Length: 200
Image (cartoon, rainbow, N blue to C red):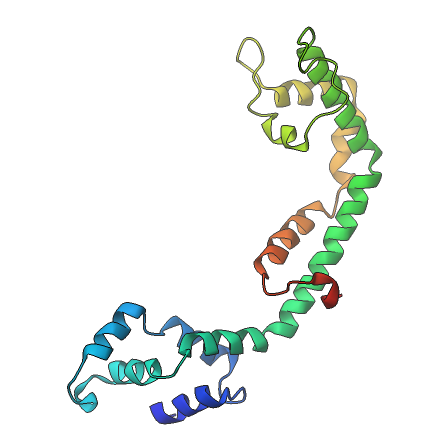
């Protein structure tokens, strides 16, 4: 295709000519603002420029060039993204159900609360707590024992191993969790899908 033909296809938003592969290449090599400033300042003959520069110069004259390409690429990949998103949401829902109904997880959380209360015994501010923030679970490996040699996580693992061996198979109750974690990342990435319920 000539530069003029590609330029015309971009103006017309021609989806047959501008395949997803071609769109991705055009986006990758779209001229930057700095490059466009150089092209705008150029007063010589366009034919004297190298072919890549001629191409970038011409494409830069298309109003909203990069935005057009990105919009077309999004549209071309939309159905595929929807299917990915639907599958991810199914995984998230299943994992949520597993989390809610896992008796082993409930017992583990009870154990963490009891151990936390034991550690904080005598502390009027946090002692004998009825619960804890979910963010506390991310701090189990940094909460040190009195001697500083172990963490809450070490003590918890040892306690489960010695006293509550059935909790060691907790992962069996939460089989969908790893896949759901990936799905959460995907749903965050698709910011253009403002209302996920529409996609379902």
